[in-house]
Structures are given as structure tokens and as C-alpha cells.
Length: 155
Image (cartoon, rainbow, N blue to C red; front, top):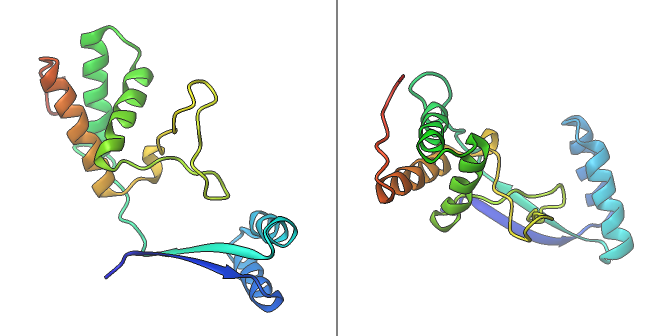
């Protein structure tokens, strides 16, 4: 069974009105109205609709995936004498080849860094359990390849 379905559809007035009603109900009216209006003006009324099952967000708190990601990145940053945020960002980018997600803008386009022209990784606040596991595996592999021993739990 597919867990995500992308549909390209023509936004008839009735369909666009239904989409706007749903968006207003969910508090997303302004952004959806912009997209529907732009679709009419610039794209012949076509919209791309993505339907997917809800994802199980990464775990947080003590002994969680979030705790592991931040703890491991902190240990690596100390070992390498680098800034924590730089290490964490680099680990996310390295995790792209494992399937870690790119950040998308409100139109669904991949956000590209204006600094280096590369895709920007998604924030951990929006990733699934599986995507967090990809990031943790990437961090552990990097540490092993650079002879950095990662400790579990509090230091």
C-alpha cells in the first residue's frame, strides 16, 4: 500500500471552494488562498495535492531519539572542536543519501540554501521516527569513521 499519493488536478471553482473551506477550518486559509489564486493566474488552474498518512514523529525526552541526536552531535562537536549547530547541520546533510528529508517551502518546493546552493535539511521537529533513525545511523557512522567514541546517556 502506498503511504503517499501525489495528484495533479485542475482546480474547478467548486473544488477550489471546497479546498478553501477545508483550509479555513484548519486555520490555513491565507496560504491556501494564495496557492489557489496563483494556480488560476499562472498555472491554468492546476494544483498539486499531496495526500499521505500521518507520520509518527520522532521521540523526545530523556533516552529519546531527539536526546540521542543532540547528545551525539554535542560529543562530536567537542571532539572536533567545532560548533554544535555546524556539526548537527552537517550530519543532517550527510543523512540525505539515507533518505533524510529536505525542507520544503509552503508551495512544496525544496528549499535551497542561498549560501551554497545545496538543499536545506528538514528540522527535526518535523521528522518521523524512521527519519530520526536515519540521522542517528549517519551520526554513528561518522563517529566510527573518525574514531570518536559516542557515549549513551548523560556524561
